[in-house]
Length: 144
Image (cartoon, rainbow, N blue to C red; front, side, top):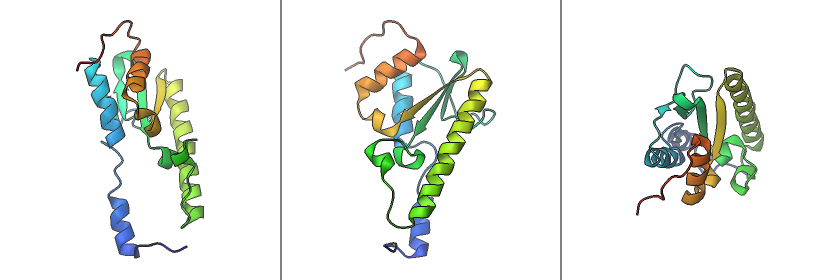
């Protein structure tokens, strides 16, 4: 199956795919802020430049898109029909890099958590997970 776009248009479309400040990442940041957590973004001095870093808790959070990082959900398991070999190799490289990054951070004494795009759909579940990760005891319900 050939691509529906000519190469120039496909290149333009792919350039629009963001690597940071994505909608899932913004959702996690908003939830962390609501919980009163202080964090840093994309620390280049840490392996893999984690999306969100909570230095005081030695916690590194990666917010992964299911397709791009090969999650085992329906969206992550989908492989495009066009250029199949390229996409399989790309996702495999991403997964290998993710494992290496996790190992390097853990070896440096960091806790590493991955938040998947598909898990962010339910705000209450996200909030509960973040409360657990942050080690907060009783947190008042979210406003309004």
